[in-house]
Amino acid sequence: MKRKFAMMVLVATMTASMMTGCGAKSDNSGAAQQEETTQQEGTATEGQSEETSTFTGTLDEVKDFMFIVTGEDGTCYEFTFDEEKPEGLDSVNVGDKVTVTYTGTVSEVDPFEGEVLSVEAAE
Image (cartoon, rainbow, N blue to C red; front, side, top):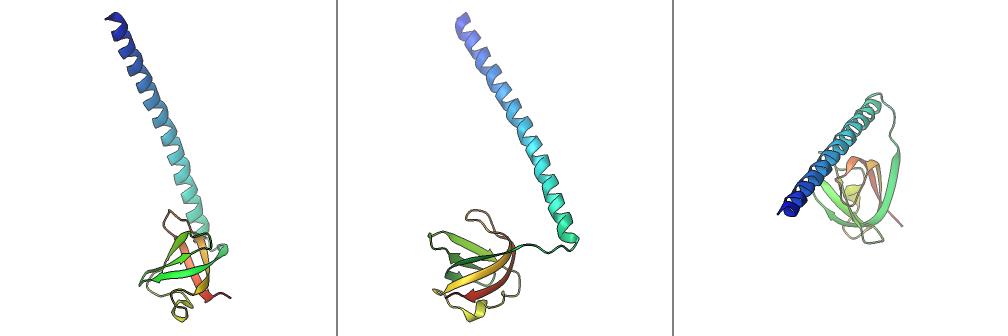
């Protein structure tokens, strides 16, 4: 009986220490992430130009606020835009190979954060 009680106390202590360790780590990374976001916002408001990137793939779908381009490796990327369609989006059709010029970051799993500058038919 004493052995069972000692084991329960040991497990409870280990669980509590693991929870405390994980909580402290999470708080520190959140502060660093918030500081990084603040720095990024500060540079954007100072008027520095952002770096442009391009992505080439097949145009799969076009909606009022977004379009989807699939890369050669089969990965789909969603590009969102505000009220106005990006330059050149009206001149391409679904199924065309296109080159998208954008600022910001594009990810397979995260939402698009940036601005689409143009969409052109690729050769």
